[in-house]
Length: 184
Image (cartoon, rainbow, N blue to C red; front, side, top):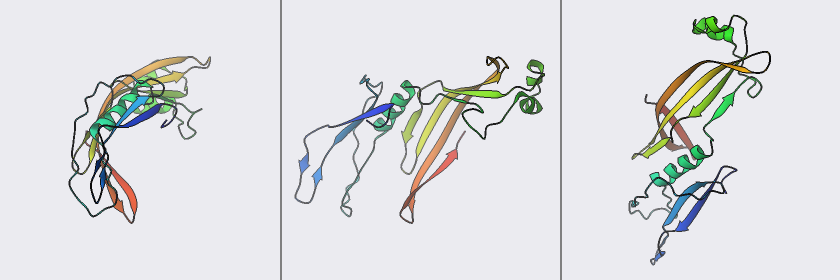
């Protein structure tokens, strides 16, 4: 069990190879939605780790591991969230503030009402590995809603989002550091 949403199966994908100076264990790591071991829409591709012998332990993660992780969390709705003033204390946007940025909002709301954002992933996020970084592509939408006095909501507008980011990991002063770059 990874958390309440996902669990991982890390079974051996073959017999261990035992050599005089080392043991080679090939594990097939698949992430599933918690309690739902369904087949993944992805196919695992084999890969090799460059032959080096100066470290005690080598770990390698394939695109397949990250793809099944993305699929599991997408399936459980982990990428969907609602942001409102009640759930996020620093989020204090109302229709009056929005109408100063987007004048069309003033047509739908003369009285200032609190605003709520519903963020939804519309497709499974795609993760691809490169030599020195990995790329995450996310498709989603943000619905902006006004919260009316009777606690009902009125949709103001929806934004469709397509984001492509690159993440590079480096070790500085014995700490794993990441840098994020928004490609588009």
